[in-house]
Image (cartoon, rainbow, N blue to C red; front, side):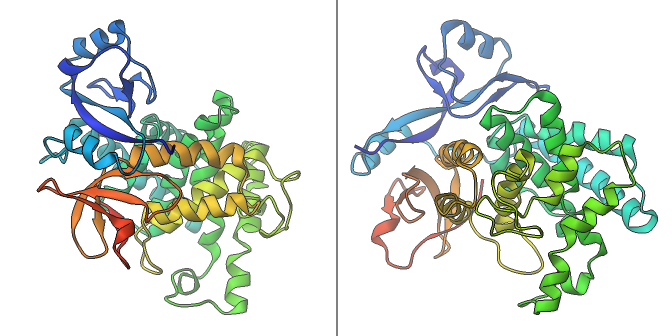
Length: 371
């Protein structure tokens, strides 16, 4: 019997011991209180109450698609789509905006002066670590933020956030390595600063020569790092190999799993996920559901390590349940069931209480995440 979850908004006064948190809980000042997946005790509930929080998100098990509509009807008496933006979301947006501006300064120094400002990098790593401390819930916020700068600037910040999240979920990186993951994430594409913008943002297929030029960006970055011995070796090789794949099908060196650095393996997943789901001046933005399918397929094909992709995909799937999505026909509703075996096998609840089985509607799919 297939098991999945709905993630519902629950008043703190309705919490009971045994409830499982669907998202991490943060204090009003942004510090972490409890991680997603925590099974609540009376003491933990009291702690939440003491901080004056109004509500949290909890997980509710759904055993079968057939049972989901009935359970969802009970769980979602009122839509969970907030009319305004929460303080936590405002804080996240503020830190993210500052990080983007710092990333832009970093790129400007590299492009014009070929210089790395270590103080600026430390500040940037600290800011990205704060953003990533939201855990898997940060991925949903990334989809709703306004883009104010060049795609490459946002992409670099996002990959830093995602790399930290993926690394933490894998449970194999030390605290120092986690900082190195962020540093490698924000610097992974600096080699593209030497690629012509006409090629980088070309609207259409690249020629063989253009593609070859773009594929040199990891090697360009690695060579640039040779001037800066303060950059850890793990960061250098993470950046050099972030387009390599476990089966040897990547570039620029075509190395395989045994030779690819763990940081590079994490960056590869973070890079693909954000590149597919980001708004950009070229290409097409794809829903996180389609991106998950792609990463999962590449994992089964031997390109991505399951040690890093499996925990990330699992948590990402669960945090998307309960979010609002827009369908390809323009309607918006709340995702109340998804069994991660395919983006079409899902149930969406609309504001009038009706639940639609997307798999029974030919040609209909989830177009994007709303909030």
